Image 1 (cartoon, helix red, strand yellow):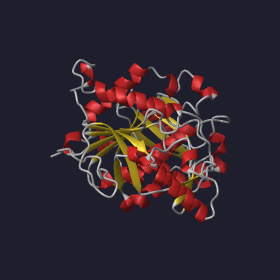
Image 2 (spheres, rainbow, N blue to C red):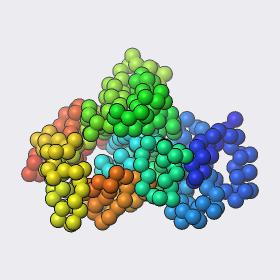
Image 3 (cartoon, rainbow, N blue to C red):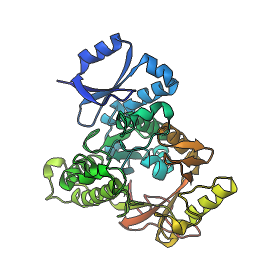
Image 4 (cartoon, one colour):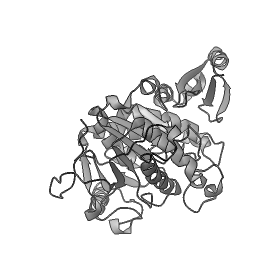
Length: 378
């Protein structure tokens, strides 16, 4: 029987019910029910009572409608990957990670008609909440933040014009693990505790379906040490190799070996420029650091192999950040994450090539200017 997961704006959590009957019942009670279909063919929905929509303003309805973009809406379900000569797969840990680190790049390649596939590993249940009216969604209160962030992510993908998004293993298969060393790390359903083989199989299935030439995720430290970022790295590296191995799980589809694997990167010079610009604009808090060398993330400039100038799509990236309203406050070209630290929303994004052949060098730094540089994607 077809199922539907109904998620109230107030964060009651997800429950499985027969789709058709419940949709009629909720509609009769004045709820707005927006159905979506995930990549396994199962249906789920966001249901918003009319009074809460009014209380949360029209933006809640926009988020609800945008939820149809998540996990294989009709356009994504009917897509044939090989119809797109260039195919890019990005693996991120939580909703909003895709926008902060790679949003402009995603918008850039989507605008150039490449197939951009986003895989998100958790719902981000442990995030803090910036919006006072939604503070009850936090994990230490009523809960429900993860379900709410499904809608935020859908709206962000819509802003970036990304139509193929999946949650690894399906929505909610693995839970946000929280920051390293915190109690949520020990929850058996969290991504940090995930069975690596199971997670790898799920990602191999996507890779063999989508057949990307380029895969992007985090470095071995997860960028800054978050356990879900570290686990995303482990799973992606293993899946990158396994997807091209004829002996690995043939039932998951025809083998496919991606040509290039990249880590996201923040050059220290760029971080320093952000610190200096924040100070010049009157902002004083950038992770509590005066120097990029004091930050727990950032890589030496000479380790950066690739920079994608996507400034033409900075507006789309900014709109996507605004969609993640429980997590990000946007103030001009600057934004604050939910722990109220400042960053600069640069339209140029940086990467380190970890696997594959480096393409032609360009510019003063001798870096690639295209993630597909050197590849024949005809």
